[in-house]
Image (cartoon, rainbow, N blue to C red; front, top):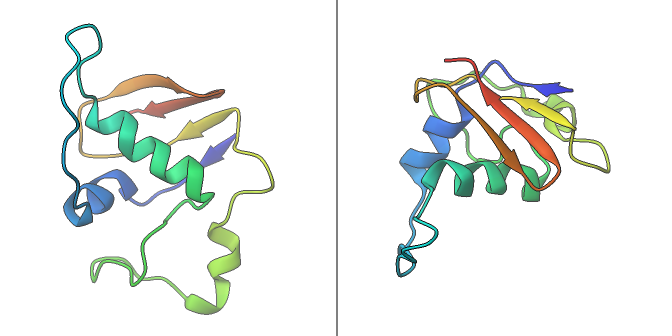
Length: 97
């Protein structure tokens, strides 16, 4: 189980620059899933550098923000976004709200 206390999703969303892919009528674009994929693919609970000014991060402890070799089975990412439960790859991602 992995967890963070920072609203990483909101910070990623505010910094993300992306051209939305053409919409597939069978699978609509899901921005939250894309943000979660960024976290899991980069293997970091806070994959932004430099961090948001609202976050106090000790850069000497940055290795503690890294996931181990594998993504966790359950990832708890509290955010101001609406609560959700999503399966991204093999990781169950939960935003309790």
